[in-house]
Image 1 (spheres, helix red, strand yellow):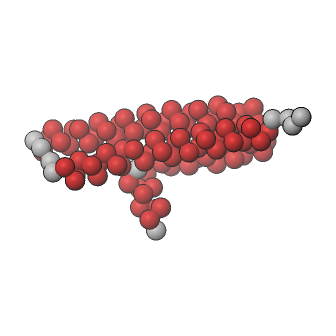
Image 2 (image 1 turned 60 degrees about the vertical axis):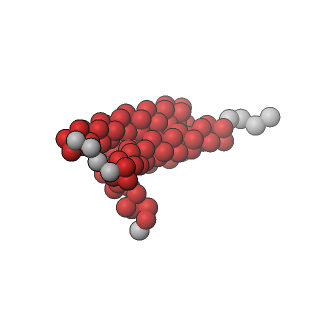
Image 3 (image 1 turned 180 degrees about the vertical axis):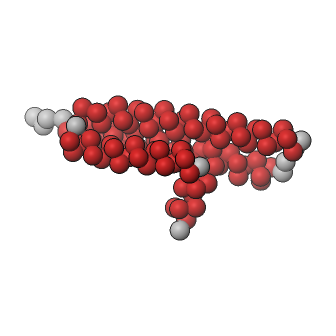
Length: 105
């Protein structure tokens, strides 16, 4: 249950796109290994891109409220960091797939 709430806190749209990229990564590792590294890079870049939108949303809320408590600001920034971590995790997994697909000596 904690994982699902963290998923939603990261933003349903962005986390959904990252999950589709993760599924595509797993399928491409099996069918099209040449795409694995590219999909990992796209996931990492999309995680950063989506997180920047989250930070902009947090900053807009702070400006509109003319100041917020520190705990509320930290909560918003935590939600903005979650897609970055998910994107980096997908990138690391793609690099593991690349290493595993290299020929052994």
